[in-house]
Length: 390
Length: 212
Ligand SMILES: Nc1ncnc2c1ncn2[C@@H]1O[C@H](COP(=O)(O)OP(=O)(O)O)[C@@H](O)[C@H]1O
Ligand SMILES: [Mg+2]
Image 1 (cartoon, chains in turn blue, orange):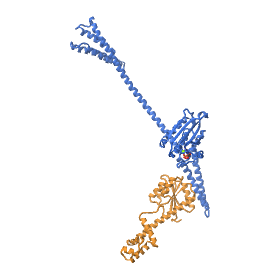
Image 2: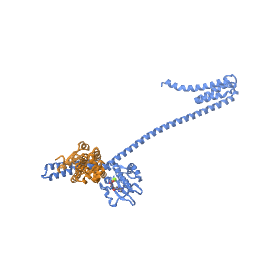
Image 3: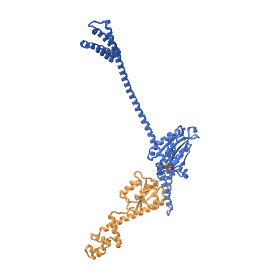
Image 4: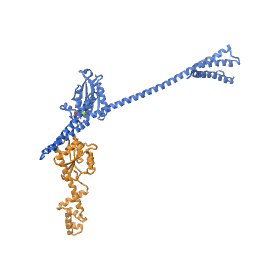
C-alpha cells in the first residue's frame, strides 16, 4: 500500500462518520422544519444524535450535539434570528443539550458493550477452533499410541508363537527325524546286505556311506538351531516389573475373559527396577499365566481366580507370584514339571517351564512352584534389582 | 523279477528317506518304486499286481491324509502304510478309519515296516483275488440263459426238482437238464457251492464290496 493509499484508508471512515453526523442533523432539520408547527422540534434531532453516535462514536456524537444545538437555537427558538443564543433561550437549550449528550453517551456505551460482546464471541470462536485443533492432534497422538501398542502386542504374539512353539518343536523334530530315519533304515539295509549269502559288500558299503552323510545332515540341523539360539542373546536393561506384567496381561485379557477367570493384580508401588531382558521376562510371565489358565480350564467347579503379585523383598530382590485356583500339582511333581518335555497335556510340549526357569536363572533369579493351602498352585520367581546388581 | 511279483510304492518328499527305504526293500528282495509327491504317484498307473503304498503323512502340497482321500476319490484301491515324524494320535485314528493298514512312527524298525508291507500286500492280493473272482462269477452268470437263471434261483432257494418243474410248468427231466447246465456253466462243485455263488452275486448286484 502506498502512503497516499494509507492516508485515504484512514481518512475515508472518518469522513463517513462525520459526514453521517452532519447529514443526519441536516435531515432532522429539514424534516422538522417542513413539519412545523405540527411537530415538536427536538425528537428528530435526538434521533440524529443517536444515529451519529451509534455509527460514528463519541466524536461525531459531540459534533451532532453541537450542530443540533446551533440549528435548534437558530431556527426554532425564535423565528429567524440568526446565530446568537439569547439569554432567555439558555434554560431551554440546556434542557436539550443535556439529554442529547446523555443519550449520545449511553448510545456510545451500548455500542461499546455490543462491540465487546462481539469480540467475546469472536474470541470464543477462536478458542473453540483452537481446542478443536488441539483435540484433533490429541486424537492423532492417541491413534499413534494405540498403533504402537498393537504392534508391540503383535510382536509379542509372534514371539510367543515362536517360543512356546509346539510348531517349532515339531518342525525341529521333523528336521532331525528325517535323517535319523534314513540312518536307521540304511543301517538295517546294510545289515541285510552283509547277512546275504554271499555277503553283498558293495551294497553294504553304499548303505554305510549314506548313513554317514545323513548323520552329518542331522548335525547340520543341530548347528543351525544352536546358531538360532545364539542370535537371541538377552538384551538387558533396567525395567519396571509392573510394566512387564501389564504387557503380558494385555495379551491374555481375552483368554481370561473367555475362561471366566477373575484376575486380581496386587502390584506393590515403587518396587525397585529389575535388570533384565523385557521380552524374555514377558515370556516367563506368559508361560506361567497360560499354564494357570490351562490348569483352571481343566476344573469343572469352584472359583477360577488368578492372582498376580509383585513385591520387594528385604534382601533387595523383587519377587513375582502367579497364583491360581486350578488343578494343582502333586507334591512329588513340584520339581519334575521344570524338566524339558515334561507335560501332562494332550497338546502340550512341556518346554514352557524349563525355558522359563532357564531364563530366570540366567537373570540371577530363581523360579519355583508350590502348592496352595486351598486349591491350585503358585509359581514365583525372584529377580535382582538395579540396586543389588550394581 | 517277474511282473506279477508284489511292488511297493514309496511316497516321501525326503530323497534320503526314499532312497533308504528302497535300498532296504531291495536287500530283502522286494521290488519298489519311489515318488517325491502324491501327484507323481498318481501319474504312474499302478500295475495290476499286489502292491501297497508307503505314504509320508507330512507331504508338501497336500497332506498324506488328503492324498488318501484323493486316491479313494480317483478309484485307486491300494492299501496304505502311513509313516510319520510324530505319533499324532488324532491323525492316526483318522487315517486308520479312512482305511490305512498301518501307521508307523519315524524312525521305524525295519521289521515293523517289513511286517506292515507283508500284511498290506497280502490284503491287496486277497482283494485283487476277490475282484477277479467276482468278475469271473459275473461272467459265468452272464452265460446262463434266462430259463437257466430261473432254475438257479429256485434251486438255491432249496426247492426240489419236482417243485421247480411245477413252478415253471415243465417236466422234471427238463429241470434236471437245466440244472446240470447251470452247475457246469457256473463251475459249481456242489449245491452248497452254488448257493454261495448266488449269495455273492446278490451282494455284488447290491454293490456291497469288502473294504480293506
Ligand atoms: N499352574 C499350573 N497348575 C498345575 N499344573 C501346572 C501348572 N503349570 C504347569 N503345570 C504342570 O507342568 C507341566 C509342564 O508345563 P510346561 O512346561 O509349561 O509345559 P506344557 O504347558 O506344554 O505342558 C504341565 O503339563 C502341567 O502338568
Ligand atoms: Mg505351558
